[in-house]
Amino acid sequence: MSGAHGMGLGNRTALVTGGTAGIGLACARLLAGAGASVIVTGRDQRRGERAAGQLGGDVRFVRADLADIASVAQLVPLAGEVDILVNNAASFPGALTVDQDIDSFERTFDTNVRGTYFLTAGLVAGMLDRRRGSIVNVTSMVASKGVGGASTYGASKAAVESLTRAWAAEFGPYGVRVNSVAPGPTRTEGVQAQWGDVNEELGRALPLGRTADPEEIAHAVLFLASPRSSFITGSTLHADGGGSAI
Image (cartoon, rainbow, N blue to C red; front, side):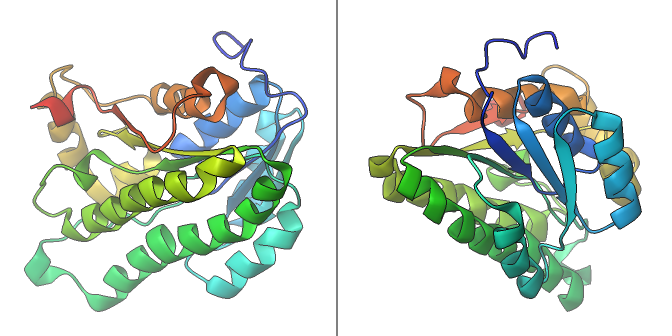
């Protein structure tokens, strides 16, 4: 894999939530290419098995729904020892505040905040014992930038960026690092289905003038997951085509 060599992830196990499509699938591919054993999670058994088969290498699929706290609790023992956790699974509704329905609001916070929180709590215990680990939270440009129609999603991701800082402070003394990657608009099937042309419009408004390819975001995740970023914790890496700069 070009660019993945030298990342030193042999003998490491990585878990990528929402790893069956989009940014998560791209992350799983790069992590596997860098030598990690990879567990991908998602809600769709068939899509998950297809993704794991496509990726080849040491990749397995475990069905899990981050919005369901019982499913999160079951995932922890199924995953076993995890050295790298990529919290990527997310619900990303687009709605004006006056139109936002409560079910979608709750599902977004249940998935993006509560699910991420308790999965991390469950898996970090082993990392703290082993005194090593890297957690990468995939957040969003809209966690720090106001975009109409993204209030629910943006607020949930701002919560995760706050968790990144708190966890970095809490877990750092045990050698466990926690960082965020905040993507700008990225071309994925899921975003396309939910946001449609708005996503491409957001891309055109960036200094780089386009949306991201999922692999471009995954390279930022790989860097923060790997020993190359050994002195970086509590940071947010803005992989957003310059969106946060303007």
